[in-house]
Structure formats: C-alpha cells, structure tokens
Length: 112
Image 1: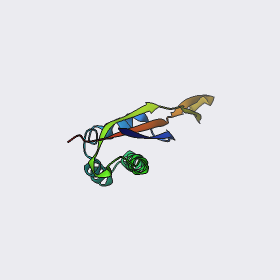
Image 2: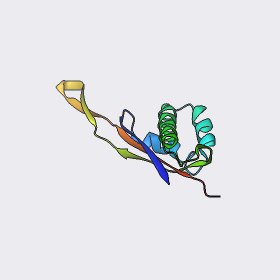
Image 3: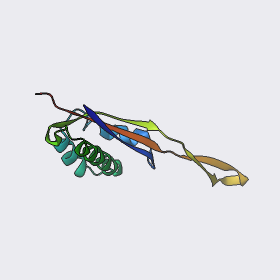
C-alpha cells in the first residue's frame, strides 16, 4: 500500500529539488527526515514538509504502520514559469523566468 503527498507551484526550480532527491530516495522515513533537517539548502526544508505531509496521510489510513514507511519515490516536475522583465542598456529589456516546481513524494510500507 502506498501513500502520496504533492506540493504544487513551489517557488523554486525543479533542478534544485532534484539535487536533494538523491540523498533521500529509498531510505526509511526517519532517516530521510533527519537528513533533510540538517541540509543547508532551501529546497531541503520544502521537501521535509512534503515528506511529513505524506507521513500524516499514512497515519490517516488505518492499516498502515508509520514506523515501517520508506520513501519509494520522489520526483519534481516543472510547473508554470513566471515571466518578468529586467531593463537593460540602450532601452532594451531581457526576460527573466522565475520557475516553479510540482513535488511528489510516494511512501510505501517496508515488507518484512
């Protein structure tokens, strides 16, 4: 049985989230949360909140054992980009893309 949690329109680029995902994927939830807590990146804090949300979703299911949960999969997809303009020399402007991400965390019970 698996549970999932999704954070949409997170104001960071998916590339920055994907750098953190490798350290957490496949680990037990307790280890994953302790690693994320002490990482200095902003996206580690966001990822920690999404993993905690998935654990809370697992607690709501009656037949799930929260102590045996492992992080089965995490992925970050591209969300819509906000377009902004920055003035440049000689009356020109350059476009700035402020990217967003959709983060999905899937947890499953460890089989004995």
